[in-house]
Image 1 (cartoon, helix red, strand yellow):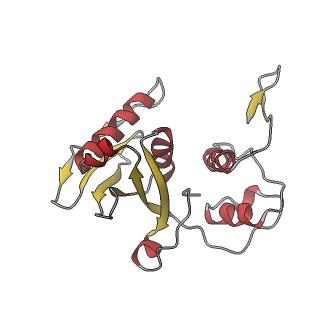
Image 2 (cartoon, helix red, strand yellow):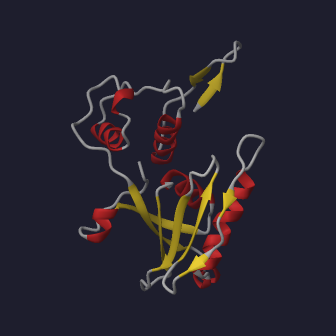
Length: 189
């Protein structure tokens, strides 16, 4: 959706055309270091999602008066019957491999060891100094094989899950939604 002109300036080449495009665009807005991507539309759902993602200042249309929320709980299912046999530790190791594959000259990850308390497997990782982020993986015992991941790095988790054709039915919750209402949405933003 983005391109560069002949002077190496980034611009929006095309508008989002699908729900996946919209999710990717909102992630780009959220992660933009110089806050140069703005929303000029009036779609109420997009405005709500921008307000919840603490990006209201990047909209030319007033966003609803909504406090930012953190969707840090995600459930998902396996597509393939063989993957339904994955353990929490397997998922933790898969996510580590994904992060390692994302490393480059500017981003290097450090990890704590995997630990388990009998109900979940967890570890922490960082890409900047000692700012570690914990990630918890657990099987939640639904009729189909379903897992739960809890972590503050929701966008990174979502990108990993979306890149894997092995997983489906992503349901993102705030901690309060997870504990009470079970209302959810398909993406963390």
